[in-house]
Length: 247
Ligand SMILES: O=P(O)(O)OC[C@H]1O[C@@H](O)[C@H](O)[C@@H](O)[C@@H]1O
Image: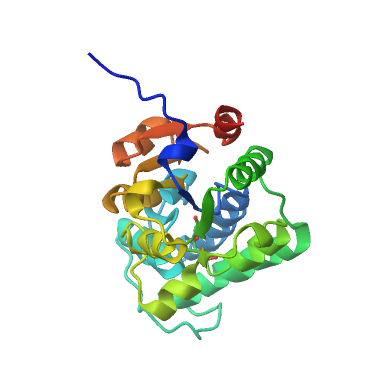
């Protein structure tokens, strides 16, 4: 017999650890277009390569630290480039140079268009505040602070584990669980009392590997089945569903 647990989520879980791009803000779309432009320019220099697609993004790039995304996608096409260094100029054909080129494209669009949070995500954050649930953002992006600021969410998330912090602290990026575990530690909440919220396969894997109480997948295009296969305990299409449930 299956016994349904009707304990309210806010009683079982004392913290929510949010991914940022694609979870709180639609910045995954800006990342995707910037990656596409950069990779297609690069692929045109190599023979017999079909264009970069959104499927490539979901499989090899989504959720990972910048240079890991470049390296993993190129490896999937059998392309090996020198690593280079983070100071490489954006027109250098190295892993770092290409990552820097993509970053220039991303930051230009963010500066030009700004960003608004997903309304359902903003609503759930508001409801969680009302219930006194602790929150942090755990993002691979080194632009996370700028995105939170542009979206008007910076004050909601004083605890941020971003790509800069993980580099400074030597934490391996998603799909390793370390950045999420660091977020839980900074909030002072045991992993089993935290919910990890993710839209990327690499991020769901990170949550599943970290022994968190719940991994909540948000399907923004990856597909619910893929998120569940990666370890999501539950999948929603929008975080408004969670706001509704807890309101
Ligand atoms: O290049 P950034 O801003 O440091 O971001 C790294 C990655 O951050 C993740 O949050 C995004 O899902 C990826 O698309 C992005 O590539």
